[in-house]
Length: 114
Length: 120
Image 1 (cartoon, each protein chain N blue to C red):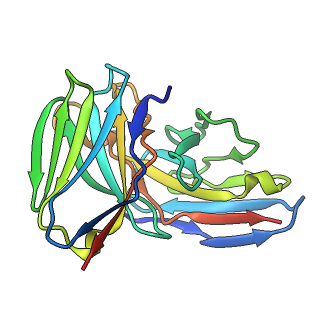
Image 2 (cartoon, chains in turn purple, brown; image 1 turned 90 degrees about the horizontal axis):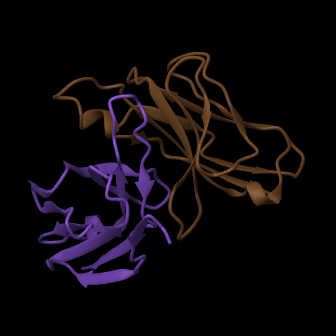
């Protein structure tokens, strides 16, 4: 079983819709949670990051972490065609000694239909 | 946009050739990483480095090697390319971080655009 599970999609929604992307994980030691966005033929770019449980909002994007359920979400409000990309969740245990390896989900391919 | 650069962006090469994929960053980051990404699959860490003269193997076994002679440079070499090496290779870097205030920042990895390698 993978440490991080993410529905690969593809997911297609009309422009303006609210998008919900999710990941579940099994390692209770994960403390740092990130969402990366990857456009076709590009490298992943960091979109959101959170530490431990809670919500974080940045413009149209909201990241939620529920450590008790081992479940993280990314919400996109008022979705735009420019949001069409693959979204990767990533997480790490983190430490003060340098070992902050990230474990990634497989990514969800999202298409926003104009 | 992150200041991390990978060359070449695309490479098509014959079996048995030696290749080096270049990665450079201008952010002064201590840590650098190489990932392999195949369609529909998660990123797999193949090598990482904590700093100059430090190299470690990642979670995914790889026939490639890396070196870290300068902070900003982390090349990956395949001595004899095979069709099974066909993949996208992504380089990333992160800062060393420190005590509170940068605890989250040191876990953030910044990625290059990738090198798409095809071995015929």
